[in-house]
Image 1 (cartoon, rainbow, N blue to C red):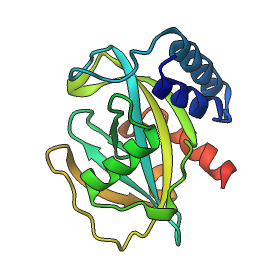
Image 2: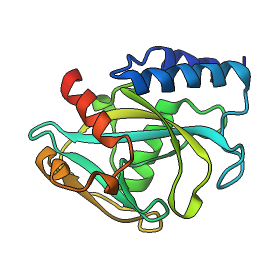
Image 3: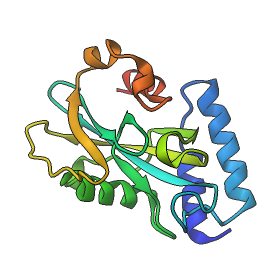
Length: 187
């Protein structure tokens, strides 16, 4: 197994599933990682057709709100993030994406291990491939100025848990409500 894939295997192995679906995603991902080293996207949008993504979920320490982006391609409110570059550590991807897409520096407030794991068939303009996503947390301050990448996002905004719950769930990543349930139990 390629060393960088072994690192991902270790990260995925360390994810404690919160529900049966996450347990299935974890098992499926571990089998996939054991079967191939071709896990990094090489050609946009879908080569190989299944590849690694890192989400970074900024959480405000004071009120628990979450920063989400209105993603142009997906047409959904998502955590910021992006594709893991060949041999890049997924935590580094999350850090890089937070800086590139929002101007957020993660420093010491970053969780080095993913909190959540999902396997998702993509929708929107780049529909049809599968993202294996590792969700990382970063504790942030909603007062921190943002530098939004408008080539990828219509906007970025902080959402309170009440606002998320009052919004149609189909406007978010399909696993977002499960992530919130795990986050409530985890915190």
